[in-house]
Length: 440
Image 1: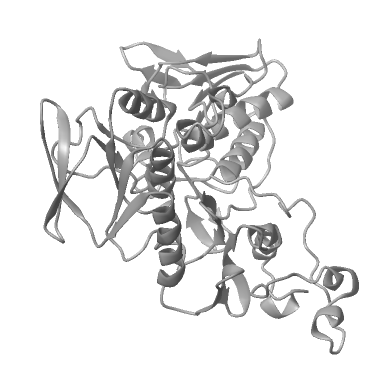
Image 2: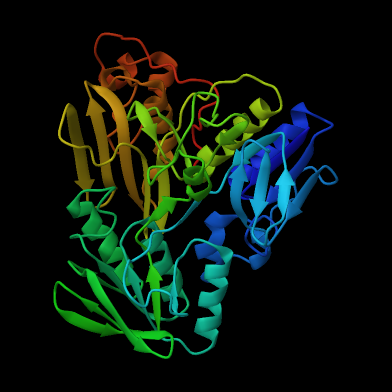
């Protein structure tokens, strides 16, 4: 059986290993546009900041001898009738089963001049290496446009390398889609302590420059122009659905898949940052562009491609970022829309920030911001397990907003926590990531 996997990151690698575990005679080809063999994308910011050695990028090849990795190879189209992947340049590659693990790309600014050599995303190893060359070549000032997780991590890495960094955000605080304004301002203060200048209410309207390079960005509002040597797009990512769109399915919200991760086209699956799977918090299909979900989906899709019939239980949004003395972890629904949601949060100047989101008293989201030496993200694994389980807030054997968790509550039930009548302790499911946080 011939298996072709388009994309050699988390989902693609997991799928290749899974195919080989089920079908020992499989012939697997992994295609990647990048010139590098598989690497760990979440380590980009740490490598650029020189907080880890570059060698930690490299990931072990999947099933050596059985899986062929083709680098610098772009899939330009798919012919489902002939069962061929059309490669850029006119060649084609036949398949019996195909996986689209094309991932996501940096969201564009949609401004003239965006193709300039010093305007970069912060998504790939190539992005990080170009930024590194620019820094070693004399770049001293950088504008990071966007205050989400990508923008915050890019600003941290560039400031660590000694650049004069300005983080420009259209909203009133960093991470506005994750935390409330007060907690976001605490993140801004932590960035300022690292030497990053944070400008809120700044929306880029024009890129200015010459000779193929941007030298300044104009912002309206507030009607100000800031000079720069580098521009980094930090406005998030969008699914790469080009191949699926040609086949008649897939859009800006990702590729639709069923419970077995099959697309509407026969013998074609999708997984990872491009797949719209069931979200256990929203109770609806969504793309969750995080490494753990990509690995889970890739492995399940790979086994199903090789003949299994497994169903995917669903994904959950999770993110983690450390800025100075602050460490933020979020899971599930963190900024709910109007509707049947209740938000409870608390900010303790010494212990940090905690937020839970409830829907009909069921825990569907949580944010924890811890400070150095204080409890914080260490509790998030328990909250993630509770969200996955669909636990009611009153059934938890601890208070998610309290500074400490009473571990005796797990051993002896709620009586140990409440001091009142004994109630049933929450039973967390085996296999959930309790105490483990490896997020994108």
